[in-house]
Image (cartoon, rainbow, N blue to C red; front, side):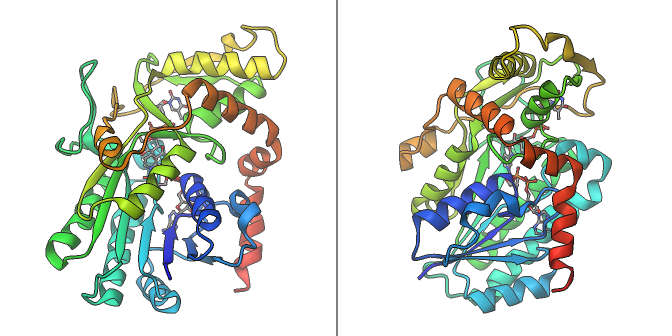
Length: 351
Ligand code: NAD
Ligand code: DAU
């Protein structure tokens, strides 16, 4: 019996991971522990919320007592840790929250796992989901982030994620805890909070609102469809080697401005507007402070060792994604108006 704690399961990537594990592994018990911050939304999991092998618990990873009780109550033997503050722009405004959730929250989970597992590490795993941003910024075309690259974080977000990665590895080196860390590139797809580039811009194009391009739009990101990330997490959770790091990415680099032009083209097409209708919405604005120029992941190790590769071509993935946001206006409107937050506050205020 596997009782798996997935933290941050009501967020963007977490909801895809929860859906995959709940549907693919009916014999597992999946416990989704999520604080439901502005980024957490139970509507992301409506289709699986009544499955018998799924439990949602609202809680804060920084609350050590709650986390400790969770391990005991559900006899947790595997952790997939995604809960985090995830938006770089917010980290620039409020670094303390990032240090608290991403660093101390991770430490609280590690310590609770250590106490509960008490040195019996058979069939246990603490799997930490991290980002390629810990490696810093690439200067040259063709250069890629490898698992052996040194850490060089620049934003408060990436500094907090780097710190959490170090704590996870320290728990292996110091206490022998079986851990795995993965560092993934930019994800896109359904259920992403519309503060991030892709859903924000699709929504703005639909509403004829300006598209704020930071700096000259020349920064490069490496995009992976979120379901492919969830598939990689599944493979690594089951077959990855303990104490290893795996990079996850789709060899799919895009200069922001080129990606934005593709989004405009696809969104206009799906809205039935003549080509070029929304080009004028592009608005160059002040650059993000400390804006990393280029991220690009080398995921050769993952492919060679575990046979994972992305299933979806980007052209197909971006069209599916635009279609999903256009077809799910109610989800977008609830999220942008904050309606769902009010709803869940009410729902949980009596518990
Ligand atoms: P998200 O912001 O969409 O979701 C984060 C989730 O964590 C939300 O459901 C939120 O309610 C929950 N959460 C936040 N603070 C919490 C706390 N104190 N206790 C319990 N739950 C809390 O984030 P995402 O984009 O899905 O990212 C998930 C993870 O993957 C993060 O660790 C992030 O660093 C990492 N990651 C993200 C990307 C990406 O492109 N989005 C890429 C690589 C790695
Ligand atoms: O690389 C992985 C990371 O990808 C994850 O660890 C983070 O959690 C995730 O948020 C993402 O970080 P980015 O900062 O790369 O994503 P974002 O969508 O915020 O921005 C993508 C690029 O687009 C970046 O170069 C900044 C630019 N941008 C973003 C926004 C929101 C704009 O030009 N305008 C915008 O309005």
